[in-house]
Length: 227
Image (cartoon, rainbow, N blue to C red; front, side, top):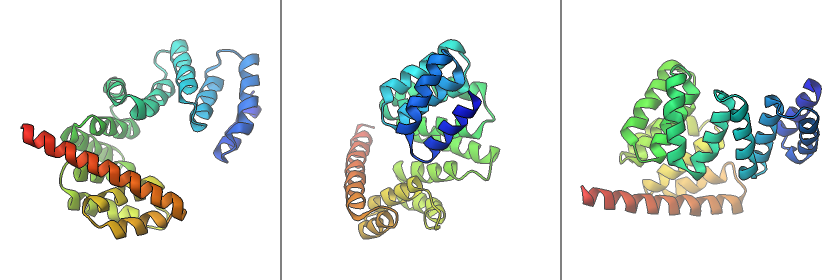
């Protein structure tokens, strides 16, 4: 089983999820309710965009071991996209169980951001940075949060050093492009996107980010008017 799991892990890492899936299904039939197999099935289905199936496998893992860190955090990643309020509820408990885990603290900040709690999110990102100063993610998330909460240029200043390096992660560049759009530096945002995406994909991403900022900006104006 360990050998087959290792092969499946390599295939998933290489983007060959469709090849890994039959092996994992066969392993699940031979070793039902094995958490290691269920976790691979959940992650493989998630990578293939089959989030409903992934959720069920994560829930099976939690059913076997209610305190499964992998199971809960797997659910969180999907609920960040589908149900941000549910992700926040889960992370409020996880961060109590693992207060010194910088990845969980960082994810907690993201969930707070997604639910509009920017000040609290920024405090969590700073805490994650204190726990592990080498982590890039909380630095980038802090910059994005500051930008989304109103100080766009300060957010840009935080993200820029990470976004302009040759090995910058796509998400870092995307966040940088979003704040460039927010600052009305649209041509610079297009250059950032085209630096790591094919032209058609870069144009589609630019439209998506522009639509997000237009909606976010209007929501902030409505919220400010109600205060």
